[in-house]
Length: 287
Image (cartoon, rainbow, N blue to C red; front, top):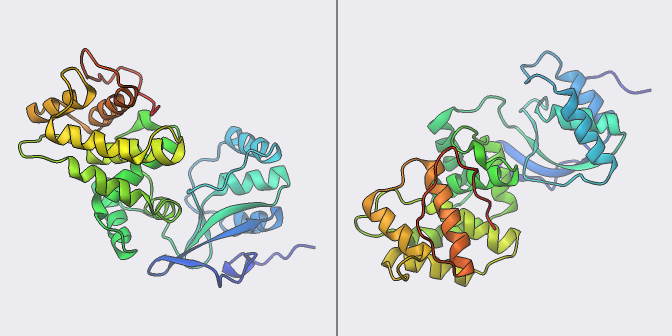
């Protein structure tokens, strides 16, 4: 018979000796979660301020688990300093429904409340700096974009923001993203207005490491042509260079969209009649 005692850190499947500290008091580890553990953890967290449960989402996750579509991703199951679950209830309910024991990225010691708006971004940046990241602000912003891309949610850019724990977990999985941020930062030049180095870093990182449709040398050339305006007339890089000089692109969503359009065209060697994006237009994919 299952114990009725509330779950805590000691109910996990490991002794946490391999856990890695993300920031002070917050550790992360990959663990296998059983239906019994999921049931205990959910029971102990009853009465907490969860988002409303979506039965449809639980059923979809359970179906994914049963049919081998579970992936170990950046998004963690999160517990507070007392070992009480505060993020991941849909996934744990799906574990119970599917009857599957599955691996998850688990974070202990995180807080259930996060900063809002710009403050949230600063929190993530500060944690990244503590973990040794260079260019903390741009790295945090690029990871925010990466999380949206991985969730297939780029259309909500500007309204959806990942938690600090999600940013730190993604950084743990993809530390090489800093190399792309560092390269993208080289794009800046005197008189530039509204440049989105983080969008350039995102496009390069995704194409070079996730979809394997580009090389880092291509990103270097892309950045160099934008900075110096050496692309041919009508080329994607010339459009971006001139657009940045004139301050043509306003708002994060527009700036990110035009970078993605330019990056796609640049890699195909395609010239453009114009480089624009309107908010009622479908958000471009990173090809």
